[in-house]
Amino acid sequence: MLQLATTDKEKLRQEALVKENQYPEALIHAVESSQASKIAGQNTPHSGLYIPDAGWVSPVRLCNYLLQHPDIHCRFNTRVDKISRTGDNWHLYDNNDQLIASSAIVVVAGASETKRFEQLSHLPVKPIRGQVSLKQATSEAPVLNTVICGEGYISPPLDNQWCFGASFDVKTPSDEIRAEDHQSNFKNFRMYYRNWQNTSRLKRRVPLVA
Ligand SMILES: Cc1cc2nc3c(=O)[nH]c(=O)nc-3n(C[C@H](O)[C@H](O)[C@H](O)COP(=O)(O)OP(=O)(O)OC[C@H]3O[C@@H](n4cnc5c(N)ncnc54)[C@H](O)[C@@H]3O)c2cc1C
Image (cartoon, rainbow, N blue to C red; front, top):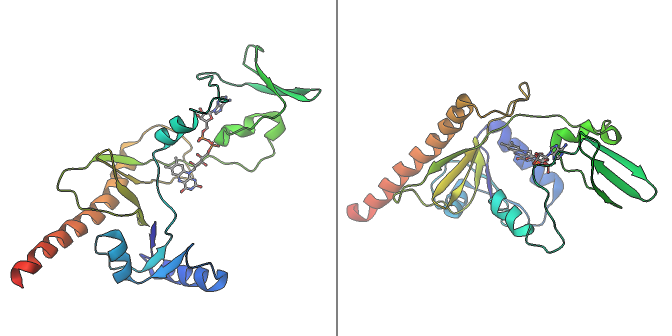
């Protein structure tokens, strides 16, 4: 994963991060724009940080893979309304006070909804709106070898689809899909894509000129 320094402020932040933390080179290291371009397979005018072992996954595929474990049993479309404890066990109830499940250990991974449970209402969790966008990749799509983060982010196409984003809105907690969020994501996407297409055309011309 390449985290590009697209502003002077970000460049300074990255320089300080590398200098102050002395991370192992294999974990994270600074790259000049020429190295960043080589890693990405596309020209970029920006230097940045390269994290070789960071990557990208399809959340759906990852979840489906994890769910193959024989000890995992799914209960979809089941809303937990209340958690209570008696003896050594936690009990989960729906909104009709019907017991859903009991267990010695409960892991609550309900994002901002987590606070709805009395036992967890103290957590400093806050909903922040965000949206990614998907676009079909054509056969002429420029090659991209790694995830690029900077002005937004974009990952190499998976199943012929670019995935890029993300919008970020601390003021509106709604989870509806919004056209204006797609528009701002597309603005960033077009910026990257146009530059790369120009680069690809230029690259193709070089041998002919030579
Ligand atoms: C566009 C976008 C970009 C993001 N980028 C980043 C990032 O770069 N870095 C980062 O750290 N985070 C990022 N986040 C935030 C991150 O995705 C969330 O913090 C994380 O997914 C929360 O994980 P979770 O498992 O707690 O909840 P989620 O993955 O949100 O899943 C919660 C699940 O719990 C279910 N649920 C809720 N309440 C109940 C209930 N009462 N009973 C039963 N089920 C319930 C919901 O239906 C949902 O399926 C981003 C989020 C978005 C939307």
